Image 1 (spheres, one colour):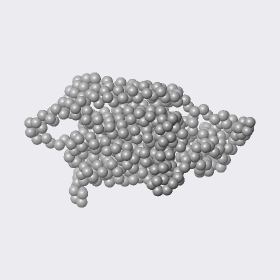
Image 2 (cartoon, rainbow, N blue to C red):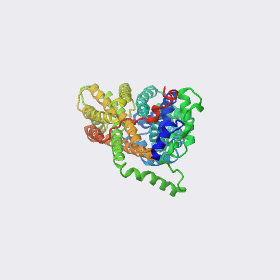
Image 3 (cartoon, helix red, strand yellow):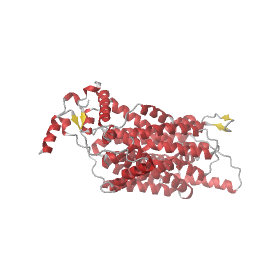
Image 4 (tube, rainbow, N blue to C red):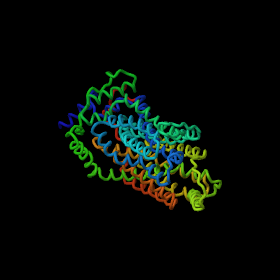
Length: 525
């Protein structure tokens, strides 16, 4: 009887609301779009930071005297750093705040990455890239949670998908930047470092620009209202909602109808204990419930899907410029991808056997940049398609269909003899990367706020592990059995797609009843 009266009072009192209700009443407009663009810029900077080595390594192989083995572990280095530190960043995001975990780490990632462009040798370059990747890890996973928690129930899935589309934009901008910079012939000698500052070093710096801009924008952004709410900081949360309302509706903050937030039981304890013992205890508290029912099946599924998607997309993309460069160096177009790669390898082996003088060649062919841009455009288009369809067919259907089809295309890419068709199939294969943001959107809905940041970070940790494993194995397969890489990771994507059939139907959350009866002037524009 008492609960019924409380519900009736809540329905009649529009000044008190839950967070989801208050976010719906704050509207949707310019603030949400700007926040999505800022988060997208972070994701764009993140993917460019991870994948730039795919273009740097072929261009720097003479300056750094890289062997094939060194190229393999160097390309996997950023993902290794992410694997080692993702857990810490997930804990920090859930206990200290999303913005806190991201801001300082982004600034340091930009600075250290720029410094790495002056590295005089392979060891110093690898160390600086590794340290930079450690700080880049902070925003790489937290940003998905930060992005989703600023949008209401009606628009959350679409905005997370649109923000994730900047990953696709990054895969277009990266080859464009590389095409603009790498063919240049400048070489400035820096005596104090005993190096020649060549185009590949400038490319490393250029790829930090999106991260640098996003860091400036994030400095002026507030903390996630969902985190503030779950931490019991209701007044701070309400102030953020007032700012969103004022920007979206072009009205004074004081006119926001919600004056207080209804407390829920979920409160994050961010100050339990002190020192290393307190940190470890807090990490344990944030993690163990995720690996117990009812959350255990979902963390296993999201980690498995992210592992498969990252290993297939990032793992292959790191080597994609090398593969395309091999295709560009051969005149015949009626050869399978792996036949061309094996021909190039056998020629190099024959030269070495015959004691032929081998001149280091760091030329990157124009066709490599052109085809990379085409793949990026296809990749980006998939994000837009997903953003349009997600509200109509749901996340589960898109995951199952996309992962299955792209996996089949990966297997087929090495079975055709026409290079143009092979590149098209490879481009479709890379579209599986659009499932990263979608899987994180699923995680945001599956896990409660208290564990959401940690769950997404663990899933992304699994994904980065996939990137490291994928980049290493693909480099190995290119040397011993090229086709196995296409078949293995294509098959893994198909299995990922079938696994997603076990997901619950990810329908859009029901809009609270109180919203339907809200005054007309507080409805979303």
